[in-house]
Length: 601
Image (cartoon, rainbow, N blue to C red; front, side, top):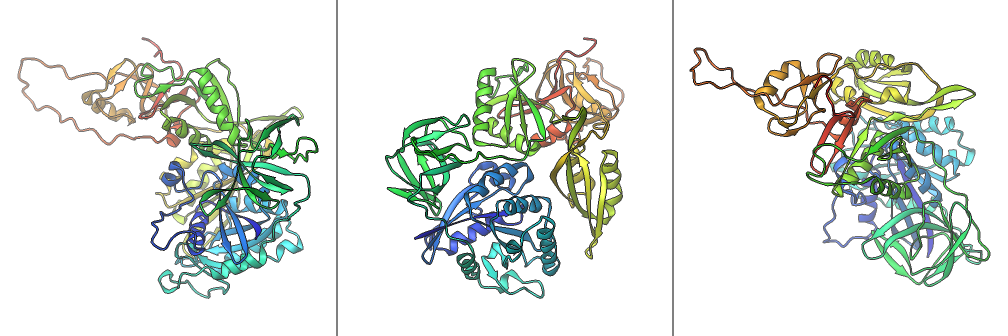
């Protein structure tokens, strides 16, 4: 049986994981009566909750006499490092594009990487059942994108197929009008046939020296960390004595305990595996993504993985608040450093550095979402920590300060174009183009410093009443664009420890927006709300009504609190200023000042 390796690449929410679901179901991987959950490849809790793919994952299916290894990749720009390292494991890529939204910034990024690696490309236009589908226009936009990215003549001859991944339907015939999902028979046979004819077979250079580039990490409660990679050449057997070659190029010998292959969603042991296949190896000593496994005496070391440079940094602190260890285990500085370094071992797009103080560490990555996923992961393990405001990474080129710039594509109803454009202008954004569509929506492209996007997403969703779509991709480092006005409001800061009281909060409502309800623990220096003005305001949230034994002649005012704003982790990171940090525990998110001492007390 020959091997064929293919990646599914696309912008976020264009249907990659849903398509893989349909492929697995129709390829006979599951029993007829087997209960299969939706988006079965999204196995991580945060992936299911957020509705996005965070980590690339492997699976396989068999069609005719071929085994197809499929890699499902993330679509969000913050996880572009996952896409970059995974494309080295495959020979072809399916570019999935929404029939209504068309190519978006991350579509350009993933296609550019696939073209650079000279992969065989297929195009799938998905969601042709959408009422606003515009298949012909999207086809033209994809063609223009290929030309714009410098695809060669062979890559321009890509085949196109049309699909409704949710219904498990694919066709080679371009639909003239919107296709109703309930009017089609679920069948992906045209897609299977196209993959069989188009995806090249893996090279079977069995007699060559063994060489495997570690591109991913798998984990088992019984087997521990396992190395995942494609056999570039040679073959490997269970029990072979081979070498692991890291950054220093020196080999460390080890014996392969088990060789496993992907069969559907399972990992099944085999005695040997050959060039072209994707394997999971156990018994590999401490390794990192990018290491090479080869023979000790005549090694063939592959080029290490390189990813786009990080653009955002965030400081991680040991949690030192007065409420530390109330509902989690605070990480000591050594433990925090070890935990972050462990994360960097499996994610080539982040880097961990020493912080300015002994109890802090700098983590650099692609974006706020990527770093917030790491924070949430640590939080769910039962630990406590604190994090500072995301900051962009600056560079000095020829004595001139440079900063990262991003291309932002905004899709919004026409009513909100003016407000959004004015806000982008304030943040040094420059409009590159605007397109008005027949459905009354506008698609606007901006180029803006990455600094300008910090805190912008929350404002954007509020301003557009949740009807806007915001996408961004890294462009390049350019000269510093100047000061950008960020948060204009100050904070309401508790000036003493205790439990918040409804009477006090009721009288503070007029001062700003509250972040806490009544009856919770607060401490001096904890931020309990946003001030309506631009200065910080110390407040007493413990104040109670004075009681006397004299009956009041008038009526008491009714204590009625408005709904407080319960900030999510992402919104909290967007909201805080440089002198504030977010305290993260398994049960609570609190915003506090770096210096807890309130002036004047």
